[in-house]
Length: 99
Image 1 (cartoon, rainbow, N blue to C red):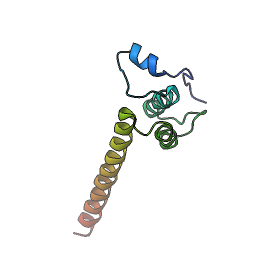
Image 2: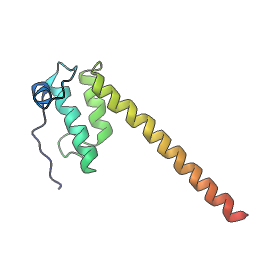
Image 3: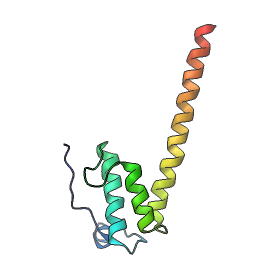
């Protein structure tokens, strides 16, 4: 099992780090920290699950948290762009093979 901090930042912890959140829920703030940690470590959190599961839990806990929504929407946009670019590259390679 990989290393995880398991001591995620609550609302006050984010504020003390110089990153104040719009969240009022400590659980949502900790889930945001867990999601970002898992994304950086490229591992699933053994307590909270994979990145998308953590995002779903976080948004269910506090749907109006701005930073949580930013992370969710950025992931959605970039994952679709990445898939689109990969498909383009596959099609270019496939088509150039037949030329």
